[in-house]
Image 1 (cartoon, rainbow, N blue to C red):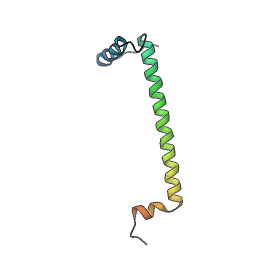
Image 2 (image 1 turned 180 degrees about the vertical axis):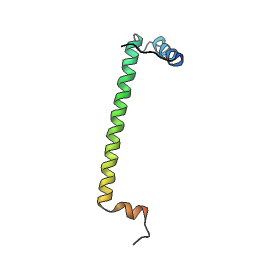
Image 3 (image 1 turned 180 degrees about the horizontal axis):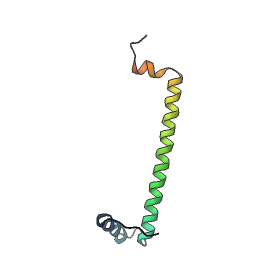
Image 4 (image 1 turned 135 degrees about the horizontal axis):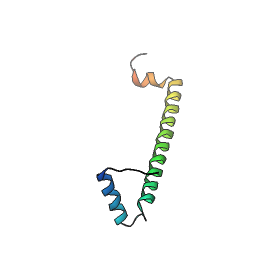
Length: 72
């Protein structure tokens, strides 16, 4: 797989390589993609947890008491 980077991103990758954190650009890109995918998975898990909380709050009628407190 070949990847084309914008000049700005390429400079930033080169800076990371110069700092010695990674052996080569492939290693850096692999780490960046892994991080992105992990963060996306975590975001999806958090979103699903929030949906479960929302459904539980709705099942208990908590939305109405919070959003419409004077509607008894």
